[in-house]
Amino acid sequence: MDLISIIVPCFNEEETVNDFYNVSRDNFNLIENVRFEYIFIDDGSTDETLKNIKHLSSRDNIEIHYVSFSRNFGKEAALYAGLKYATGKFVVVMDVDLQDPPKLVKNMYELINTSDIDCVAARRVDRTGEPRIKSLFSNIFYFIINKLSDTKIVPGARDFRMMTRKMVDSILSMTEYNRFSKGIFSWVGFETKYLEYKNVERKNGSSSWPFWKLFRYSVDGITDFSEVPLALASWVGTISFILSIFGMAFIVLRAIIVPGSSVYGWASLICVFLLFGGIQLLCLGIVGKYIGKIYLQTKNRPIYIVRETK
Figure 1 (cartoon, rainbow, N blue to C red):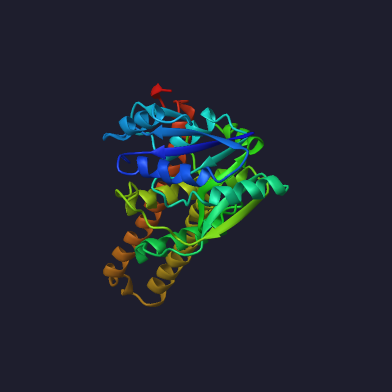
Figure 2 (spheres, helix red, strand yellow; figure 1 turned 30 degrees about the vertical axis):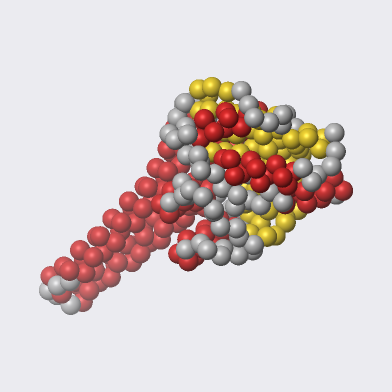
């Protein structure tokens, strides 16, 4: 019997852990000749999430394991830890809020068993129930990153996917500190089949991904898989320098041809100073973002720290 590992990152999900387990178990029981192991990653929750997971692990005969972090290290660290602890022939990554439909796992298993592919991923075809501003910025992010990076990311693709052991081992070989899983899944290669589904709204609890956190995550994704922002900063500096040469030439010629005209235009001069000062700060910020990532990587800090595990 094939063993499928189900990785479930959790952060303050006391209201959803039991529902997720009950719904997923009922759906997984429909898959024949397969056994499952659950690996819940408690990402430093401050509520009763870990307590509920422990209760599940002592209730059923199904293999239920958990890894509890010493603090909140983020979903990317939780995914990496789950992949390291998974022992199954196939590995599934799922969110605990049931926005990743458990019923799709059966289709994933059938596809990956009958086709010469290493990954079956879920892709949302709509965003029903999601704020329009969030959907707009999500579409903008996919457009930008696919224009700037050679690593293409399918719009609407979720972390929810089933992978072969070969692909999981390849992902684990990437031990970088700054992780962006959607990009990593694509970067390692391997043929991927996408299953489309309509958006499922969260039933209990609230999302731990506010707009600003998603925005920072998207910026990390772009800088992790593209050097174009650095090149853009260089081009902006070059163009600004060329324009300033033409501007100085114009000022000198005007002072020669029209004596006394150089006294006027102080307001526009201030605007130009502010413009180029802003451009310089923007370019420094872009460079600083990359330097910050290098700084964190060279520290060689662990991606996560385990407080307890079963």
